[in-house]
Image 1 (spheres, one colour):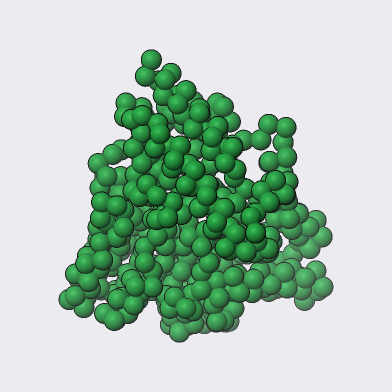
Image 2 (cartoon, rainbow, N blue to C red):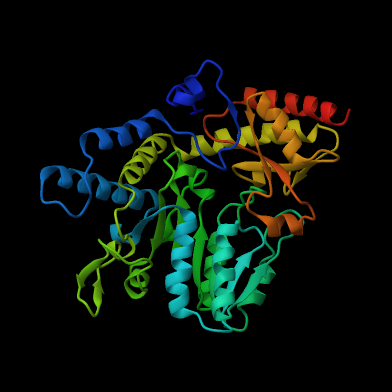
Length: 407
């Protein structure tokens, strides 16, 4: 059944404004439905207390809401155990947690970490830091001209047996391409390497079943999934979480502390030092509950139609070049482009004055832009609240902006 976009938009305060923005930047942040805002507001007004500490009813209520959020996330990504879900500040912290704990404990000089050219800086910089600190090598998977990953590079990177981790995105935040995760994970495991999936973009566009995927780690941020900022998730298989050391030290992550030593708590508390993002976790639960009322097949069909329409409109604009596949069948979530003689910052500045929100720059993916031999691009990204009419208006204003900038 087609999505009722008008009914969906009515659930978002920002789209009930007299002059709502044409928001085509959901790859950077999803807008927030009212139930997310209400859930966080209710916690602060009626249940504000710390978790896992107090012995009174208010503290129990806060703890129950917080742990219910963990269970909601577990079910959403089909993890086997609730204790495999660690709350963080975002995908960036989740990946850093893996690098600074598992990485430092298990990698030595000469070991390899395999990355793709599609990666966001959040899945590059932590491994570059380990390269400087430990002397690991980074092995890169290049892409074909159509934006798909060069699978032969994966086999070459794994061939000598020294690669210990393959860490790749589930969906490019620039090209919109979807690496074949099951194939990549299977190849990595055959070579006795672990796998980490950066699902920051994938999480709102395709269903994820970590048990079926058989990945070892998976990270995502709540703000891409219509939830609040400041909340992220790290999924890791239980045996891994049990073995790796804590990331941060402090209250809540210990069983016992003496003047000489400490005994860490069991996962996930072991990795959640200090007061956690309680309201944000509650907001993420509300976001997932809101999102999952819509069938995946309807979401995918709606977004596919929007991208197909956007690509058709963009291809008709002279001097505009789409980066990666120019087909909605091969991408999800976004499409990026350049325009000869027009800088992306100038274009999006003009569009922004018309209330049209697109992203310009390197999108925290400088190695990919270097590979494409460009300094910056413009990105249009869609979600289930967008409409074909918004795409039409955006394309019309792009044409006007080009005429003005090339005048």
